[in-house]
Image 1: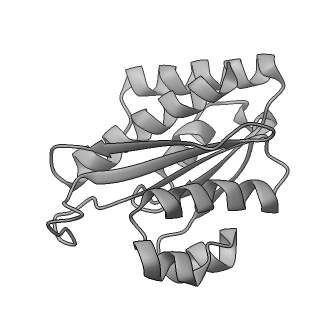
Image 2: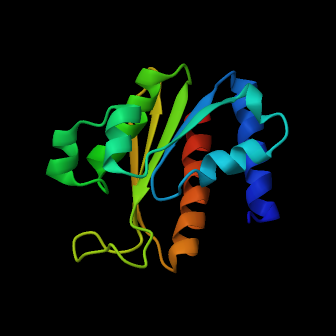
Image 3: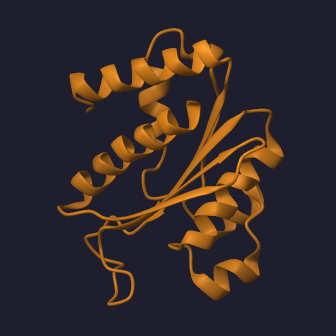
Length: 162
């Protein structure tokens, strides 16, 4: 499923995490665990990958990483606010140093004028640092949006190591 280039990027990220003495958690909605799957496909990843949350439903976002129901009602699951709450909530619930969160509309349905297919919000939380957010509008079908999101998550994590 993952290209050789994507696998090599994951290997490089894991090595950077190792060198920095950092661990990571993922909180994934539209990617359904693909980031955690890629990271754990790399042999030896268990020393830096703490855990992965698949929070596909709103109920899972609330129960697993503490996203407030009021935040979901006010902004919707696909929003900056919810992505940031997902990442921050992961760090509140586990010992990882970094958490990346992804929530979006992968399609083919589920989009709207305000939140079209391909809209994805990413958040990065690192202990002792401000939350970071990234919004993307990704082209392509469901598979393309999900795989592009994995690559962006790797980039965001890599930027959080430095």
